[in-house]
Image (tube, rainbow, N blue to C red; front, side, top):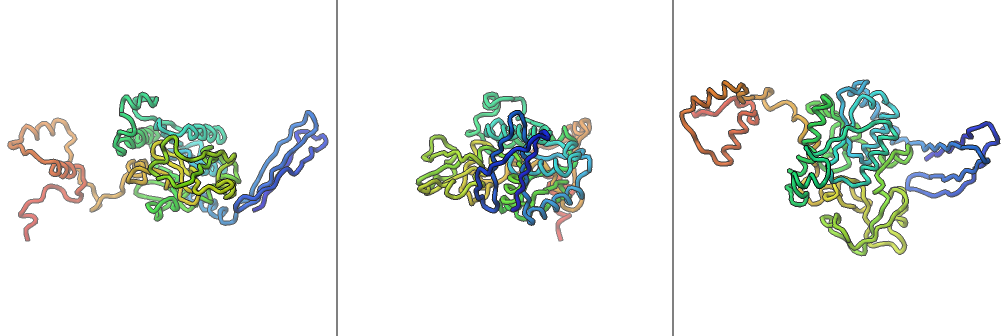
Length: 389
């Protein structure tokens, strides 16, 4: 991979001298570290450029084509759901470089669940400042701190996971979408993240959702982040060395039998020896993704980043991408909405009722589904004479 280092003196005085300080190898590329000495009183600007590999450049070109095809040039009514992960930050960097007007006009919606890693909030601030784009932050309703969350909703360890995700993520996100008058939703989902995303389409017409990072791989993301200086979570800089494996469901606990080592740089820039140490640790974990503290754990470097998410739950999504968008056209082509919305009409119907039937839970569920259109295109209850041969 080509590397170009440019030294620019601030004045026309004697150019500064540059001394090659260190050269070291990183998987897939060579990086130069340059120590610069300038005459007293002069400032020197150091600019670093790393050419993208042809394969990655092709994906960037594809990204540009998808943005031009599906997004309005001004970015209005467009929402990008960001968790400040490496892929999310690369998306912002790409938009800032190639579509600054669209980035300026769209909304970056960020949800502070009050259970995030502190390093996530630091990374968010770095991205906001570098690219001049503030996120539209939302929190769980009526609370602004962890103590208030616990008082209002309970301890996350005692809550049902679906309830926690709804109050801490889905409901705040729905509020944000309404505030933004959302037409198009953009996600940072990629096909290589999990089996559930392997057939992910770039454009989902029924949901009006764009997944422009779908074809990018984890390696593509870190290569672009390195080449363009994209801010990433400082939690990537640590290795957790163990003498024996630790169950994934326990890696969020405190005081585990591992040694936490600061690598001084993201783990993907390190050699295997740097990650495992010498003598090499039997098992080494790293953080490849960051969600809520209590549901995120480190994984082995070769594993998918999604392996470390929702580690104690029987799901792979929090609900933001699955519970906040429409499902497209209903079966039969038209939704049979049987709910009576006029209050006077509803009152008259109840007054005319001549019989009351107590339903069990299953029956009540079926009745509820009927008026909201879950049984479309069924327009009403089935009668025996309508179904008899």
